[in-house]
Length: 252
Image 1 (cartoon, rainbow, N blue to C red):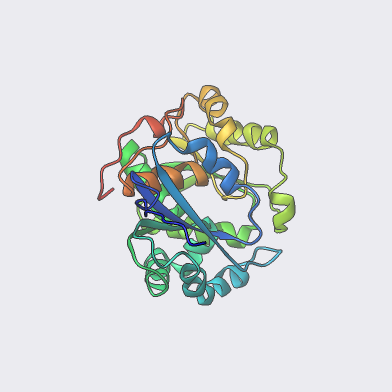
Image 2 (tube, rainbow, N blue to C red):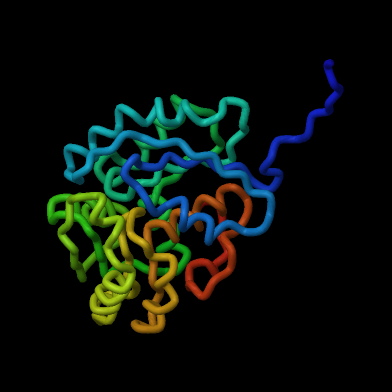
C-alpha cells in the first residue's frame, strides 16, 4: 500500500555547515557539540584520509584528497560554509589553495580553516603577538609560525609537546595542555596564547587558561567554530571564553 507524504524544508534553517575532518581526528565533533547554539544549525561531516604520524610531507599529501572529501558532502545541501579541520595542513597547503580545492568538490558560499579562523580571531581581538603551544614536531610548528607571520601575527613565545603520533595527540590530558598553555601565556612578550591542533582537547580548559594568564586563550577548535558559525550567520554558544564574547563581522 502506497501512503501519502509531504516534504519538509531542509534542516538547518539557521545555518548549514560542512566539515572535512581528518581520519585521525578524535576530538573535533565532540567539541563542536559543546559550541553549537540551540538554533537549527545543521552540520554535515566528511572525512579525509590522513597519516598516523604528522609531518610536512603527510600534511601536504592531503591536498589531493580535498576535492573528493568535499564531494562526499550532500550535493542537495546549500552550504553557508565548509571548513577544513586541520591547522597544520592548512599552513602547509595554504588557505587559498585549500579553498580552491574544496570548491571543486562542493558548492558553498564560504570556506574556512583553523588558520584563517585564527587570523580573523586575532583581528577581532586586536592581537598580533601569540604564545604558541603545539603538539607538533619543530618542522611542522615552523610551517605554522611562518604562515602566521605572513599574516602579521608573530609567535615570540613557543612551546611544543613534540609528538608526531596522532593517536597520542588526541589523548594528551587537558590538564597537561592547560598547564603548558598557562606557562607560555604568562610570558610578557605575548598578548594571548594559542593552542594549536584540532585533535587537542581544549574547549573545556579555555576558562581556566584565561584565568591563569589574564589574557585571551585561543585554540584551533574554538577559533574554527567561531569563524564557521559567524560565516553561517549565527554565533557559537556563549561561554566565558573571550573570543566567543566577540561579535563576528564578515570580512574578518
